[in-house]
Length: 533
Image (cartoon, rainbow, N blue to C red; front, side):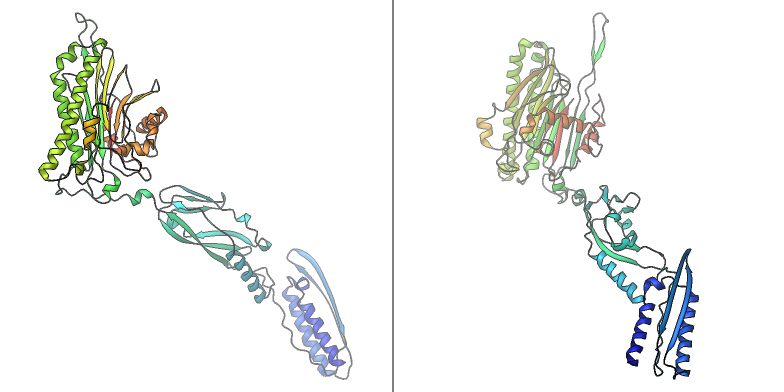
């Protein structure tokens, strides 16, 4: 029975001492009194073993950190003469930390919190190099047990161009490095930040490369290859204002005349491999007859010597047009009335047919001399011939292959597309000047003629421009798409690249060449454009 009582005493004492509510924030004075009491009790039991009962009574009052709490406890139990009181470990209160949990319990809490953080579903959207990034991150939306997390720190974000703004609850910046980046999140536990450790969690930020960087490689075309041509070309034809004599010196004035500009840029798909530019162009204004001539050609990427085919086509067509138009200069100067339009049309029909046929024969002769196939020189061809008469502009065109030719009138929102693109069943398929049936059966049917009062621009483009800017052949007939193109040329684009189409601006050639470097996902072909404006 006495052994049982002894056990009961021990059990009650341990229960009292382990009660967190009773002993929370006890002062050192209380701790000293408890130890003293236990020591005196032990001594009394040993000296008075004959006594059958020992009564212990203690009252303690403790004021804890600006709060008044009175704790009273009475211990009164019978203790056998032979009982031995074991020393009892008293939990110490860490005043610096402001906690009274035993080390093992504190560790258990931290371990549980660490597991909770580890299992959080934390994801971040992917970023892209050189593109602004913004991601919401609100720590409050994560309901931690007992609201035990005070703040979070991201370690390593600055290395990739990002930063966490806790006040805005956002991660922002412009990523600088592509890759899967491991970032450490440090969760700060509420309380003394110096003494309490943080709980770390690793997350991954995926930053995708800028597609432009993947296409940034620019290997110059070797100059020792057959049929070498520069990787880019540009030209500006300034046509001075025309002075009128007036009558007896009265009424003299200058009439501004349109200029021409063109540029051709090797595509990124060729540049990364050091392959040559296949496109070509030619511009000419005849001061005598006042005809504007623009020629654009796109050598087929699948044809080994298409770069030479496009070059021959542009040169030969230009030579023949200049020759034939000059032969008829008297007609053009005398027949300036609308009733003469049919005669003018016949001259242009003969001029264009001769130019296109001779271009085909020139390519054929080149192939035969080199013992190559004519299809190795496959090229498209786009031609426009324009002149202003008293009744307006006479515009003639010939077109085979993809790309586009159009007369654009911005103010009146009018559009004249001078032909149809020869789009194939699959991407990249088209028809070429070098196909015999084009010359035999379609030489005249591909000619187009328009008489128009005035225009904003006559534009010729290879598919390196029309594919990204118009997307489909059908869109070539939509004025909205031409508006977008014109606005784009005038600086309404993400790169703020602008062509200044003011009169006599010779810098327009450089500006147009720079504009051709625009980015369009999946469109990396050679780009050539010629504009009369």
